Structure formats: C-alpha cells, structure tokens
Amino acid sequence: MPEEVFICSPFFGRYADQDGISDFRPTHFKGESEEERSKQFVVAIEKLLIKCSRKPPLERAYLPRCNFTTEVGESESNCEALSQILFRSRTFTDGWIVDKTQEAVIMLSADCPIVAIHDTAKNRLAVLHASYKTVVRDQSILMVPFRFHGFSPDHVTVRVSPGIGPCCYGVEHYPVMKDISYVCAVRGPREGQRSVDLQAIIKQQLEKQGVPCERITTDALCTACYEADGKYRYHSHCRDGESAGRNAVIFWLQ
Ligand SMILES: [Zn+2]
Image 1 (cartoon, rainbow, N blue to C red):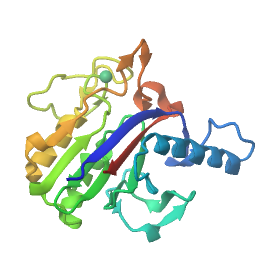
Image 2 (tube, helix red, strand yellow):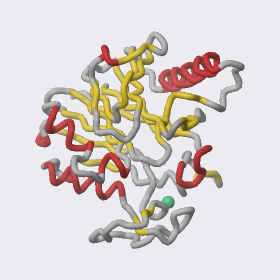
Image 3 (spheres, rainbow, N blue to C red):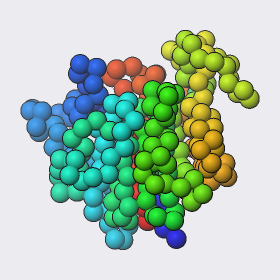
Image 4 (cartoon, rainbow, N blue to C red):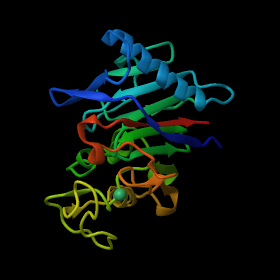
C-alpha cells in the first residue's frame, strides 16, 4: 500500500509581501534582476526535491499560491510551469491534490501547519495550508477534500507538519478551549494573548468529520520556539516578523 511521505525543512527563500499578498518574490537571492532571483529560487526548490528523491524520482511538483483561501486545486491547466518539474498555480489556492506517485506538493510556510490527507482507497493526497484564517471560519479548508473531492473519512490517514504551538501563538479574542495545555501564549511577541492550539483544532475538526483519531499523526514541534543545537530549528513569522524565511514542506505519495 503506498504511503505518503514528507519532509519539513527550513528553506531560506523569503517572500516580500506586496499589497498584503504573499507573492512569489524571493528577496534574499543575490541575482541582479527579479527574473534571475526567481530562477535561483526555483533551483533551490529543485535541490530540495532532489533530497526527496527515490526511485523512480519525483517528476512533478506543485507549488500552490496560498492566500488564506479555502480553494483546493488539482488541475494542471490552472498552473504555469516555473521549470520542467515545478508548477505553480495561477490563481490563489491554499490546497492541492495529487494522485500519482511521481508528483509532490510543496508549501512554503512560516508557522502554519501543513496538513496532508491521504485517501488510501483512492490513493489521492490532499495537501492543505492549515492557518488560523483557513481553519477557524465557517467552512474550514480541512473539510474541502471530503465535501468536494470525494475523500472518505473511513479511508484516510492524516499527517500534520510542525506549526506554531499554543506556547507561542495567541490572538486577542478567542474562546478558551477545553483540555488545553496553555491558557495564554507564554513566550514571544504573542505572550499573554489567548492561546490558540492549531494542532488541537485541526484534530478536533477532522474527528468531527469522522476521521478516527488514531489515523491522525501530528508533529507537534513549535516552529516559533523549538531549538536544536542551540539554534531555532524553523523559520517563524510570529517570531521574526515580516522578514521571516519560510519552511518548505513537501508531501508526496510513494
Ligand atoms: Zn512555542
């Protein structure tokens, strides 16, 4: 039975926000023109893909253009080719579905957990940008694969990548959750604000949809405060602000 696999790796590309839209504008690369810097960005992503390589190698990777929507794409015709293997959605979409073992989905994130839902019966994989804004709303992005793309809660396994933890993530107004480990964020710029546990919210929503809790695997490392060898392991928008780098999260079927 094929299984989904992922890596979550600090990726040193940065986006510059323009007009409030997180767009594909890598700023830390040293090329003289934007075109040159974009090429360097693509090369850096392709190197990451090679890291994921196995036999047969990944042939195609989709990079959705996230903007806090609940859109989930799957049609290649909605993409532009950034290279022979890297495809980026033309419109804003915060999730992507693949169904071939040679295809991957890449998300660049700086605190938001990325959720991969694998329908093992149909062998389809949905990868979703599970931010506060895409999950805590009338229709959560987590429901979209089940309601509109034929995923069955009886046949899925779910992996959740590291994201910001309840230790560091708070908002001014949020109801206190039951059985929480933090009432308020205890460190960083959000310290003292009402704690939000995105990983717990993701789990609750999926269980409500009918996914058995034992099928949900969460990587609970906090992107804002987890350290390894005396250094922060991940990029974090909450911690580093607008200049934060992004973590590349890549999921694929194998
Ligand atoms: Zn933390």
